[in-house]
Image (cartoon, rainbow, N blue to C red; front, top):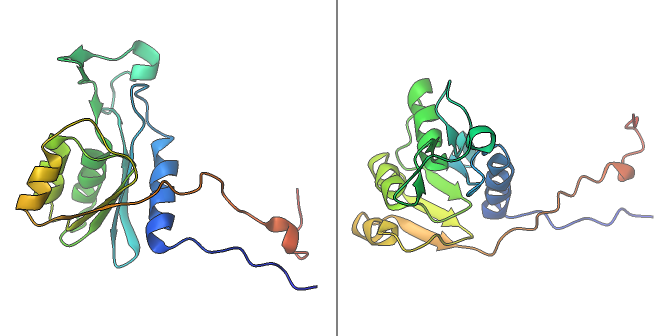
Length: 163
């Protein structure tokens, strides 16, 4: 009997699902965000919102709120850009797959980093991000949230020994 093939996710769905998984590492309970920087279908870096190295995490010590924003965390987009920077990875022409529309500051950082396309499935509260993306000619693509289920069909592979 032939094995029923599942529909493979598109590249955009795949990288958005990766961003969703990355967001699970976030340490600020106010919002979990994941970002994946991609060029030529290759992941350059990932980032999630969390505290600076050596500091306590919001989930442990509480958020540090200034003007209704948690200032303890570095946003996911910034962490992905900084990861590229620390490893000497050029971001020019890359795409950013992000679980949420970036805030204004992150939008400016993505533009300055040479990101040419933003793919999201959730909007954020009103920011100037979209205005700045338009000025910089950065394409914004909104997609439906990918399926949260991971299809790992090990049952169809009789040669794999299950633990």
